[in-house]
Length: 366
Image (tube, rainbow, N blue to C red; front, top):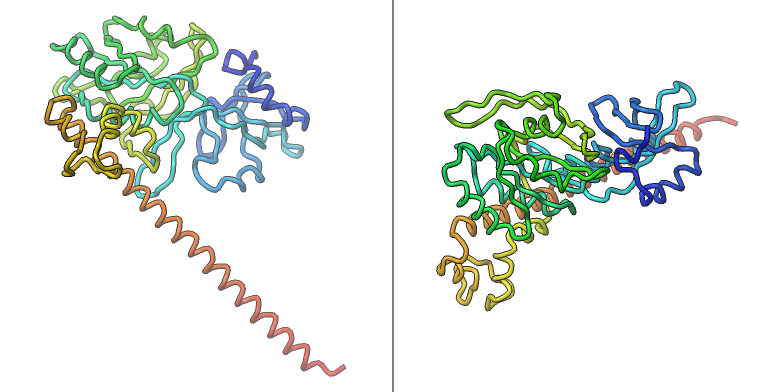
């Protein structure tokens, strides 16, 4: 198996040199579950597990390998089962806050070149959701492309494409209909050999249908979508790495039920670059763009240069980031406090045990 087909290049080979000298082989993770990982190696598809040392060094979810990562492995001396001992630094990653209350980062895909944000132009279409996805994707260090699917049922297609393109400068916006196989060729310039792309979007947006067209066969399952509300059932249940006829590599992901920004507002600034540009003209450097005099952002809204809904969503996402950051710091302090409390308790038990031993030795008549 030629790993260059899966994105291996000279830069990765250079970074892997120390692993190679230690007797390890490279592989790319193309699938995972709770027990093991699917690896694409020079010898073909294999399954592997994390070594105990690697697992012990994983202190949070983002420390664990995910689909798209390049890892170093070799067979276990006792079982012969491939063991993963190391991982190359990620060039890029798309991540979000894990679903639920835990304040941890979940890396959805690693080492990606392009993020395709797919949105259906049906009753479920939302500019505000696109802004949320854009804020996440802008922090990934990968190229961002919008795919507006179901163009065949959109009455104001030109207006919608113009609006989305106006909000996200320098980001390609393509309208297509996966169902009718129209416009899919617009994605080809981003699907070069060895390049890794990921398709993201809410359920029912048409990600799997688009991937089926690119593959040329119905490999990804698709679900029926209600014509009443446009919402689709969750069908893609695990991440997969797929090699396209064009030579590009696709990481397909499940429809994301919950997409929360974690604690970095760099992506937010990129997604709302127009607001950030006006913010530089505000009278006060710490302007919150809510009710301050001399606020250039509020002035831009009043002049129709920025929509009021866009500014509201900006504030909403910024507040979400601040809230999640506060919760993250609180959980970290609580976790650290519990750790030292446990250490203190064990230290007292050890001290008490030593004192008991000394007392016992003192009673011995030599």
